[in-house]
Length: 58
Image (cartoon, rainbow, N blue to C red; front, side):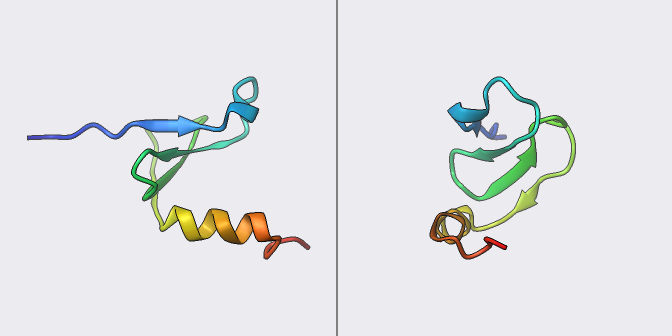
């Protein structure tokens, strides 16, 4: 049995092509411009927390 990933994109970026999408299981990321391209397996929840906290602000 194969399962199909469901991908979501931020509602703030629906009208642009420069964003990433995440799976509903929050364990993969991909470039929305290349939906058939490679994906990055990642722990998305801690990544989002770090971004929101400003950890990557320059």
